[in-house]
Image 1 (cartoon, helix red, strand yellow):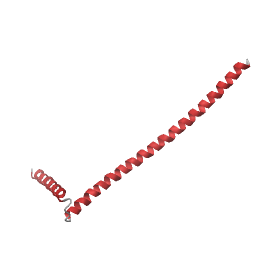
Image 2 (cartoon, one colour):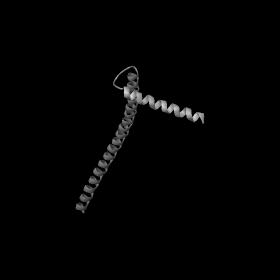
Image 3 (cartoon, rainbow, N blue to C red):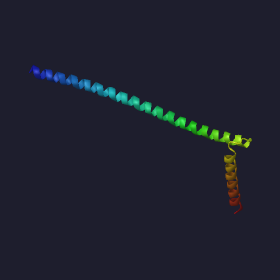
Image 4 (cartoon, one colour):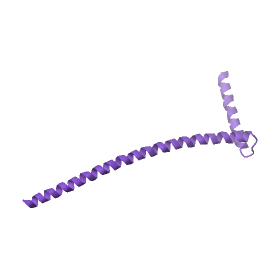
Length: 96
């Protein structure tokens, strides 16, 4: 009978250790999920900042070429022509 009791005690100890490991793993998993959420938020914020900076860069490039820079003259002319076409289209729509 004592052999069976020892086996039961051993199983209980192993089961308790297994449950403790499971709890630790679940806690670690939850912490990792929180880190992933934080990282995703940071990535989204940085993406928005990159987009805003890209728009600023494009605006500054346009302004620089309007001030007489030779580097971006072609792009500026294309942009101005595009804006003129849009304005003409709007005027045509208003005329109808």
